[in-house]
Length: 417
Image 1 (tube, rainbow, N blue to C red):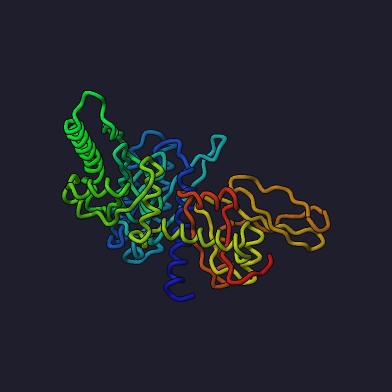
Image 2: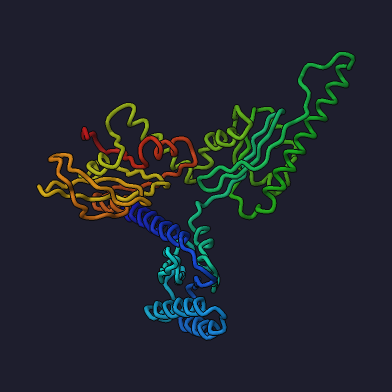
């Protein structure tokens, strides 16, 4: 793999590992305000953090509940012990430490401490937080797909406005017009009818602009662009009429012909604006899945499912490993007394099932259980295979998860496996 591809793969793996830890931390609960989270920027001296933790440990002695007091002080001692591993400053992008006594069932608690080094984005400020849950929101925001676009679809009957956030389309506001049809009612002059119709169209365009302005103007400095879609005369009239706030007008990077102007039209608009969105993750995901389906339908240079994909990975025939972002599975390695080794994919939340060897029908014993994505990515890295995480926020991404088990691959050549 080239250094650029290796760097991208490493970044994908790091984000996945962060996401796994965050999901684990979100599961934990404390019986009181006893779970401690500390966010440390890269320019914050470790000695200053140690001093702060020492001060918090001293102040925790005032907590009335003996159990909460003990748990908070134990958490702070654990954090202080972790800080000893660092020199003057934290690693690049900073450091986040979580520590506390979490409920483990039956009235028992378990001390948990997790350290996350060099998060995807820099930690911007020092933050000490003590609550019944760990503070993970700042890390979640770091893992959100980058890119923020405003979406507007309209015709003279209806309009929808929403966001494209990374890979996710979010419909937000909609409106229906009072514009009369082209046929006038009896008793009206043609001129009067035409004037009333133009007024109704103008009022509707103003209503659409007001929806868009209310939604987009407060975040105009974050916007990477605005996409506008609809039938040719309508969208052009709307844009040429300067209905939008002038700062939003300058943000329009694409206008596209789309047939539908309901919520589905927002998705059609994204599809029709691929050139403008060429650097955005959702387009990359769609391109990967379209290539996969093309290979699947026209030949044999595609694979899917855990076992077939794993075998192709080991052969070195997989060019790109496609994994659903929603996949949460473990792989269990079994071995029977005759030495046959077999693999089974299980939901990560479920217990390890018993297994009968497919070859000799003997009971097989568990040798290992590990995260399925880690298992596949390790093989992929050894074989020079790229790994692509695919969102479920579009139809073919959903199909990868629902119809293909969340695991697929585009092959370098046909293997018959």
